[in-house]
Image 1 (cartoon, rainbow, N blue to C red):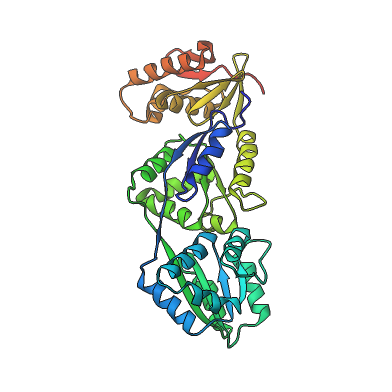
Image 2 (cartoon, rainbow, N blue to C red):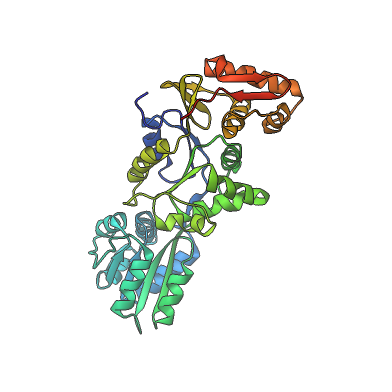
Length: 364
């Protein structure tokens, strides 16, 4: 079993570039559950974007901030459709152009413009500090938005005396089909997901919002049981605000995020010595002496409860309460039988007459 993520189940919330992320995870051996948390709605015919573009070409700005590559490209594509692309280029070529990161910088250059500066952190906070040091009093600043308003950014600039022109190139909306996202959240709550990945702050906020009445349960699961990985600090914002720890790569890239995940997740796996065999836990499988063995939800729920007891006896009633669908006491006996079969070593789970079951734990 050479793939670092073999047997692990990873949740993917991305809509844009989801195929790329899923392919990277699967190449490292992971099983993926995809529940897009958002969809991007471009605004080529949106009256707000059209009006903002016409205002800008009529009265050019001193500074333009490009927050995303897809948004900046989309802006010029929309302007091309309106016959305004050349006027937009002329309006921006004399401005201080500030892309937020390398991808936005590439979109700026593809539009025939030259950037003045770009933050190494790829963060809005560093961009804002640069603008304040530059001095914005009396200047017109255009900000290409990335799907959501940036009230703190905009209000700080206005308080410093800038006239801010907001350019809403596209917006985030809930997915047309909420089913996959709701199923992903249910899988997290059922303990069937080892890690959950995020590539945008709006997606993180959408997942928390979609949990609805189970918000507290979801936050608890993400704090305790699931490794949460975000592509960068901005993405992690809504999760950190909810008290959820988020692992982030040094560079805000999807590839870097997957590499970080492939190191961090295996290092956190629960490892036990049971009946002279080495066992590693996964959300939907176990690894016994290096062999990956899938485990169905009911026996896995029983196994998780037995693992938590660390060799102590667990009563049939407690195991019954752990089963996803409940049932009568014989459902526990059925789940134990299926668990022993899945483990491939029946002696790993001991029956304690009239008391319940326990794992044949050995000292670590």
